[in-house]
Image (cartoon, rainbow, N blue to C red; front, side, top):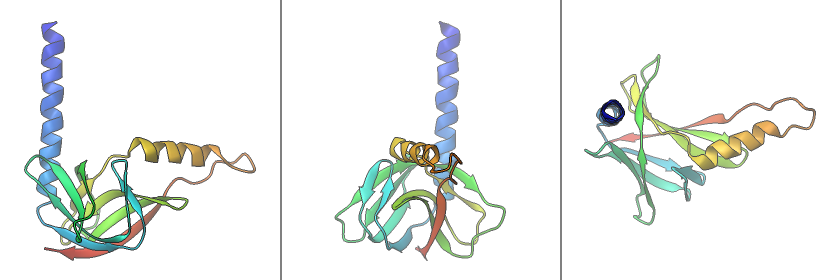
Length: 150
């Protein structure tokens, strides 16, 4: 019993360290105009101007500039081979549906990755399973939207 308890404590500490690392990667506000409806952590948001901020708990807040929509998302640290020159939000496009997956700050090879929601995973599985000639279709297409850093 003690071994399972210690294992659980270790797992929790690792998860908290990953969230803290992700937060340190999102040190500024990123603002962007998103020209399509998109989902974050299972919540669908309309097109519009959005700002993304990180808080001390390791959560990202994605909210519309008009204040009408907001969602919280946990994120993990991500690395790129090449530093970004602009603030960038990356979306998975599956058919006509878009899912926010990454946010990158300019001048850094670090960013944050938002895990796939259950809704996105199910949509990917349905898309891959469905093909007219028995061939598997490609997975999600990446869509990049640049923004401003504050």
